[in-house]
Image (cartoon, rainbow, N blue to C red; front, side, top):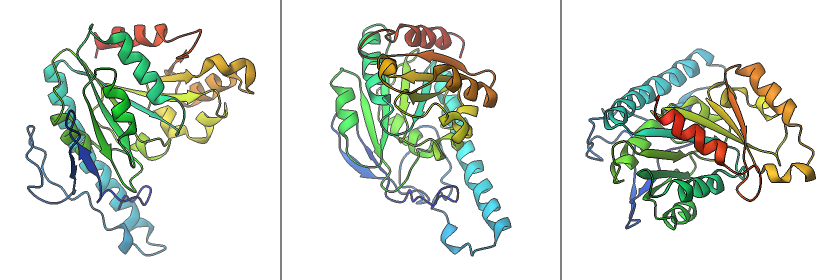
Length: 273
């Protein structure tokens, strides 16, 4: 179990790209997968259930241990991907914020210009991966079961099943959650937090870690602004109070302002990552 959120990753499954074949992923089982980039098989199946109420020190130690082990995997992922010239984006948001819609539209616009790949994270179903594949983009699905975030170990395995090409872009769509994904580096070059205008404009203040760790905040569904009670300036102010360097952009997959600014940012950042 994860000491940060109490979720379990013992039932995580990675479904292969083209065939969609599913294989159960057991953290902590030595030799459960063959790695192309030599991840050590640290135990990611944690003993949080044995922590008694009031044992704060022990809980903190376990949490630090989880994140330290994840960082080993993340650093290996990053080194591998940088060596390939692969630009990797980690997309996080609440459920329903429009991550997949933005991703599909982006893939349609970038298709044929740059090699692309997608890792999809959901607790269950392969619906989003299938939607991605319909754009002609290779995609692999990770189902975490009761787990509420992706981690670097899972993502490293999933990436090995994709036909990733140097100088391409790998999008990682994380589980819909603004809490735990913010604590787990996946080895990405840039982290993107997506906030829909159908949510509260005070989300950055309520979930500060997600916005503090992001390079850019994408405001999605901006075509709905005339119909919802969302203050763009307030949302930007909350975000910049937490992260003064965060870049903020508006998007819509249906009408103006479109996603041109978002795509321009991706293409520019790709050259400097």
